[in-house]
Length: 308
Image (tube, rainbow, N blue to C red; front, side):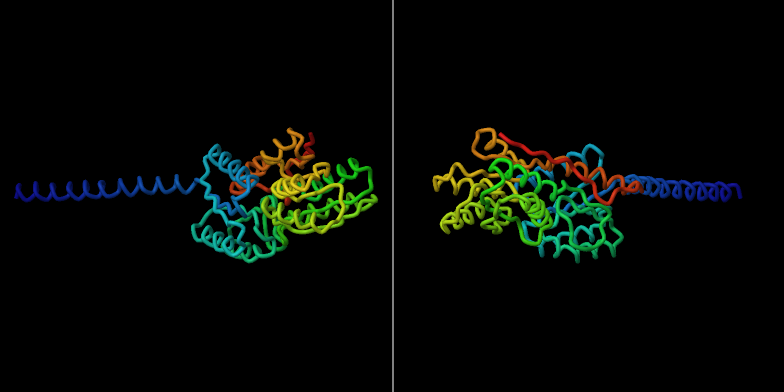
């Protein structure tokens, strides 16, 4: 009888120990999951990383995410609206907390915004806006104001009369529309005529090619406004080759090559858009949204005219 009592006691103790050994790891795993679940994840779809401006923007976002202890995934649409939509769908499937979008095309991206909205994932548009769709906020420089700064500078430099060429950005992008709008508003009251306005898709090689074609058409002009520095630098190369070094060239973005060109007297001016600050502000705003804070519908980043 005594043996049976001892045996029963041993069995009970074994069961208690087994239960404790099972409970402990489950409890630890649950705690680990809770901790990892508190780390905010951000997906950032960028129109193209084949442009120094957007590389700097991405670096600003990455630096701020690291500083704040957030996880960020950056995907490159390579200038292809269809690839961007697919990339955003992948980010939605990954279950990121917030999606930042720098649209390759302001119209095409609308369907991706709808998908994110249906998945209850807040979206922030960055630098370029979407033509429709629900976003929490838009973070960018005021492109209309930047276009006006460029236009007013050219009006002043050429004395309020003469002719200019406008190199436009990607058709359908908000940046191209708004920079062009501001520029044309600024020169509209002057005697300056836009003798050629063509797209070069924010690309340096295309800026060179388009400007070569304009030069060969024999139109006369005193200045060039390009919607970004890459096109401006391409245009300047074509002008130099044609012996037209006296034509003013104004860009937009203030990328490193443009700043160097201005300092060396090669290019006339650019509009500084501060992409690193746009990237950092986007991540900070994503954190605010994650924490349940209210944010403004438009968060501007300061512009400035950079001249020699």
